[in-house]
Image (cartoon, rainbow, N blue to C red; front, side, top):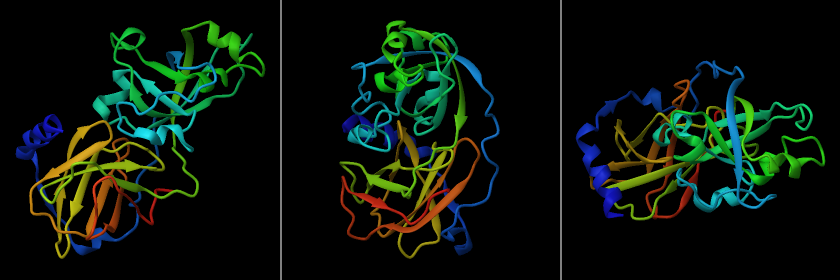
Length: 267
């Protein structure tokens, strides 16, 4: 925690205060273009964990035990640094399919970036996916998942796709250790782009949006205070710049390790 605080305090000098009118805080996503680059591109893929397993527990994005339950379950994936983007690629969704028609089906599996694979197959600027055993096997024709896993590394194609969490709204998890002077948030269940390019908070009885700093993975923080809730939260996606503002989503009596769900999502 001390290291995390140090990183966040070091970023404090870069914080900017943004002023917006009350109209900006309308509780609606702003209209922007959809993901523009959805072409299939070449990559490689491996798998890890048990053959029919759901993948990692936790991961470098900080989603923790969320990766073990739906809608993440068996859809999690670790990606190489070129896609991880120092954590700003967390939450992005991709379709991945293999190419050998003797064993591969025409189906693509959809995976959510929850982790990073920094070495081995993922090093030297390669585009690589390290999938759960279950997700990897689903790329095969029915009954041949085991044979496909036996091949180890395989050639695949991939493309970005919209994330979809039916019945879910964007939620904000207050990370352990947060105080009235150090507030850290994790974004959950973000439809559409899935990634986060910037985050701001607004205190009670204020018109100022305070810029948060990217901490690590999908975690963001703000240093200053004392901070006064309830807090509105604005997130802007990395890929297309879509913005969403959740008014007073974190209540006055907020507590660390609690998750607060908004009434909004991009879809």
